[in-house]
Length: 466
Image (cartoon, rainbow, N blue to C red):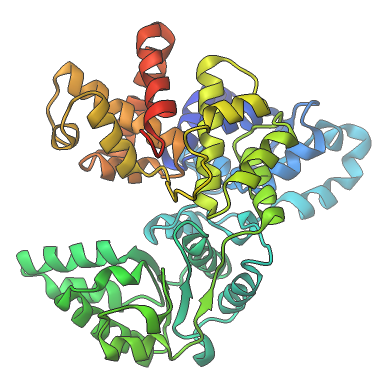
């Protein structure tokens, strides 16, 4: 087994990046350097390098990367009984042998293959857990309420659970954290996360294909339904009708319903009154823009997640003082700085941050968030290629490069999964997205002029004035 893992190590890391959306920098910084101490009783004992030490062990466990690594190893070996332990090398040495049971009890988590499958089946982002959510005064009440619902779902006081707040404040993260928590306790629970847009598209598809019974079965057989951006069903009569019927069915069956919106139910204009009243059956909870301390904590956590361990506090402080509206903008600014520094082979400093963000930060709030759609339109304009052509199956060289560049920028400037990025580009699968990103990385290394183009798009175009 040990020899196979060593021979297939690059394949294992490839699975982490493609199937579990672990960034390359995380893999190179925290996982690639793991070494096998021994294999015993179908368990692989990995130790971290001395430079990482206990911090490396704690980091891998806290962020859940050990779970993804185990899943990838099981896939490569085609053996669901394999387990892993990750610790410092010192813990595995002979003089500590007597404490091995304690080590196993502490670190040998019971991983369930069905849990990984449940997460995929439920459309959940593996990063959106309570452990990765930064709590501050702006979201403490929402966090506590969501934790209570996760621990004891389907209680009348919190069914439906209605979470509202501005874009990019963490509503989706909290919603999916509930789902992860529930699945961790019982991976047989039927959980489904969706958005109003997907719900609407499913209805349209079902009507066109005469499969409305299948549509209703999909949404009514669940134990927990999470639907994001409910305000987007406004003006869609058939969607509102189907959701009303689905809501009633699940509520009467004592199933948990979790909804998010940018506004509380009473402020959603043109929402059917029968839906508004049902949304208010539970207790609506809101999330506000993060305060300074929370913004700093979010930035530090984001940097740690991305393996950026050498960013000075002055950079975090500059971003936190100048970008105050939401979490997504904060993270987008940090992404922009780190990608630019990597492209230009520069250290991240406060001066670099100021230069990189000078068009993003202004005296007046801009509420500009770097999204896949913004990247798509920006690249299309910059390279004089239509969005339709980028999303198409056309394979001419200029269109292919534009398409690949969109994928590369989405991967590096947003938190979207490979599959989500593929959906933005006309339904490409995650393997295609992965290969496209690699092609752009290679092209940047080989072609200085193209590298300048990428920097120009990132710095000059993806900004309020761009």
